[in-house]
Length: 617
Image (cartoon, rainbow, N blue to C red; front, side, top):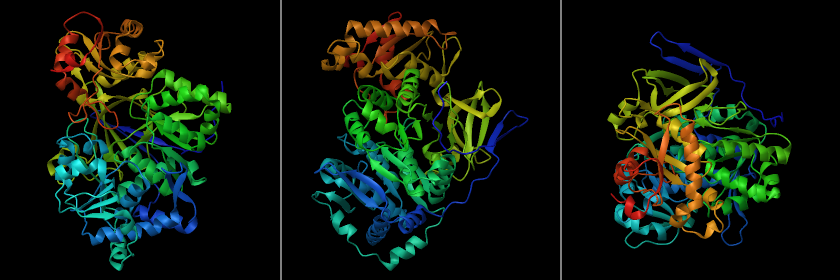
């Protein structure tokens, strides 16, 4: 069997203890190493050790090359911009709100605020681009009461600002003006001379100072402002560097598209470059059929040492690398490890990546995932051992204690450690409900042992406790595991599924379709619109065949899905059906599309196609 490419990782010693009540504790024996009081200390370190090394790069819109900022330049910019932000009267009570996609200026603004003790809050751009009322943006603004706003370009965000933001709040913009608002140009802000007040404010930053607010994605309700402290960020980075030990020996290189308003990239990948003295190339692409072209363009030029994507993004990359071996050569040239998250990885994706790695390098590249949350900064568990199948979320990082609590037939996972948030901003009731009597944070996730009783072999995600339901027969349905299995069985024809059946005798599914696999089934499928593509007899027949095979493998009513309906009307962001990163809110979809669920149960088994008029309640 082909071996795995060598990569230096942690040497973990996992311990576990079972209490009399059945609760299980899991931790690593070796304690977490020391970490700095704030990330500014790491920036200053690299500015001294490697001042000319590129910290971050983004595409130049004019020439198409890379515009770069070095660690030495970053150290100066955070002092200049931090001084300007303090002069505007910003504080924890009046933080900086960032309405921008990933960009160099966005990054500098956030780090400058952190440097002088001002929290920032990067908001999903979609919340400010889908009107007319911008309800989620209004909710967020009400929670944190921003003292200033940064936007890359006032044009796209003007309607949302005018609707939601009081004119007394100043706007910092790289481009554009806005009637009725005081707009400060980015050039004028970066030209601000560092002040003694800013130096004093930077020196006063302590580990428990609030560094930023990150909003939960809203899959369980309205977005909540998660307090993120400097301690959380630095402890989490020490955990990450301990795990990815190779980053201590070689500056890592990242090519990353994931949005910074989410914890996965906004904390983890973003800060990995700062902590380990690496280089972050901003990828303006995304895993969509249109956006993947820019990702491919970037990966033709830059070979990452550590790479993250969601499974649908990897599917697109596999297809591109199969057609373009030179792309695979660059991608794998110095790659140490691949990570996936955001959704369960199907078997065909897992095997496709392994095969490409072997063909290109002669060995498999380690492909892993983990588990974390916005409230855990996020790195909490990581799998670092080669696996035969996807899904193992690994073991706790150093400094993290897992508590597994029996809930019915499930094990609910709770976490404690310096990576965990102190709570939700201005919401003591929600904060109190998030922690148990021992101070463990309740993730709401269930897990199961990869090897029964042996925590050292890791865990598999076993669904969200709140998503599970009972059939009329009284049989419990584990939604998370069933969704993953169904999507895998459909072989790329669906990127997600909403499981139906509460109050019914049998299970069904609303399918969130994925075009690429369907287009491959139909001559000239790429030229068909969604309705025509999913109504094509060849696509319907293949969906039916795969659904039938999946139902035949079921072990009982809690795992048998014999009817499905393809959603051709996009999920609604403002209705909370989907987050801006594509995570599907099961409860919201079921609540908003009751007519579709009823239609699914009007007939017998099979595959139905939803049309827009059918999708309206």
